[in-house]
Amino acid sequence: MKSILGIGNALTDILAVLPDDSLLKEYHLPKGSMQHVDMETGDKIWMRLKPLGVKYVAGGSAANTITCTSIFGMPSSFIGKIGDDELGLLFKSDQEQYGVKTMLLKSEHSSGRSMVFVSGGNAERTFAVYLGAALDLVPEDLKPEYFEGYDYFHIEGYLVQNQALIRRAVELASAAGCIISIDMASYNVVESNNAFLHDIVDKYVDIVFANETESRAFTKIDEPREALREISKHCKIAVVKVGKDGSWVKSGNDEFYIPVWPADTIDATGAGDTYAAGFLYAHSLGMPLNVCGEVGSIIAAKVVEVIGTKIDIPRWKDAKREIRALLAKNSASEDTPRE
Image (cartoon, rainbow, N blue to C red):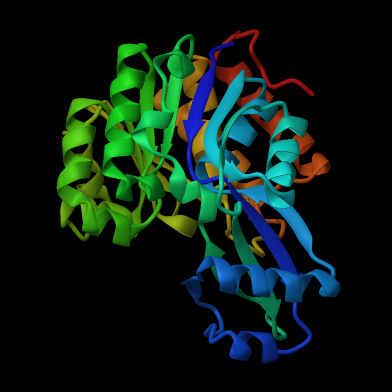
């Protein structure tokens, strides 16, 4: 089984159901928004949330992807930075329970967290994000030996704002012979780092994952399929996800439309991260492009049926059964998902 290394923001999601909107108003958090907060505000909000009864889940885009690849059976590792605190330990233990090998460096700052407030009759979600220690990951932290022996290297797009860090990471991954993938992660990050992104994609990146708005920001092309074709000129494999309308995959002259897998959607959080995990897992087995996309679609359909980014055991079992059936039609590979 081929192996994968990821790098990203080591964040713990803190999920709390609020009885009313008073806390949101107190900290000037518009309902349904995502706001960055400083350390003092982040600590105050966390202390206020604890008595409400909260759920802690290790999060962050690349961390979500790497957790899923580990559950699929790929040897999976993650590079990030945490504080020497309770949330840092929670993040580390959460990853390790899923079999992820952690390369978590320590910072003097508090561990990053994404505080998620669920409120109102329609369970609207409001985010207050404190990146904390995650922001302290610097180019000098990365050593060549971290990358040796891995077949894939997956980058979280949110890190692209730290251009020196990402440039060193892709240089080391390329030197180690890794297949490099990047999830664009956010259209505003793409817009503000467009020239840099084009440079590293042209020189180092093999697989690009983007949603509709990210592909538009990267290419300046509105139509997703045309944006896909433009992205594919810069890398070996381009993937453009269009939400409930499925996804498009292109490599060279091969182009495929991938329909969404049936799901009872209640929360789309983490769908892109899990899609990438399924795609990379199938790619590591040598599956055709359309099958890689279908595996991504199957697992993404499971995460949208739960609140948050962690798929429960029954849905994982369903996903593995469906994926085994799909792979059996395309290959006699022995590396099918384990129970």
